[in-house]
Image (cartoon, rainbow, N blue to C red; front, side, top):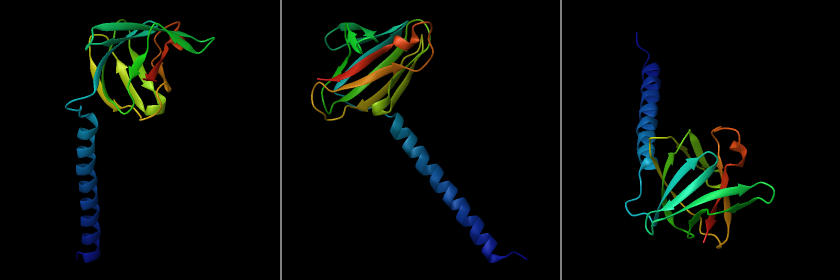
Length: 153
């Protein structure tokens, strides 16, 4: 004989799992969705052992060289206005890299021959605020110096 409590408990668990599955699927698609009209597009190319930031709007590219002694970057950075929605298009020129901005929770692999896309909001903070950009994929001898900054302009 079937116990009505067992049936109710089983149906409740099935309904809960189905609800979580549907909700997770919706969130996953929203997370991966790119904005229809971002404030700015930036092409990011990972090289051994520096980042290259290209701004298609004005056709400029900047190579970012990090100095560990002074914790500074020369040559360029990822620049963005406060509160902007930025779409970055990331690829690797030679080996696999990983663009990581820990304070903003942004991480995207830079794989040669493939372009990965990601959009994120720049915090509405004071101009001049810097967020460290790191490579989190071991990419060779000078991997530890492959850093740059997201500079809020």
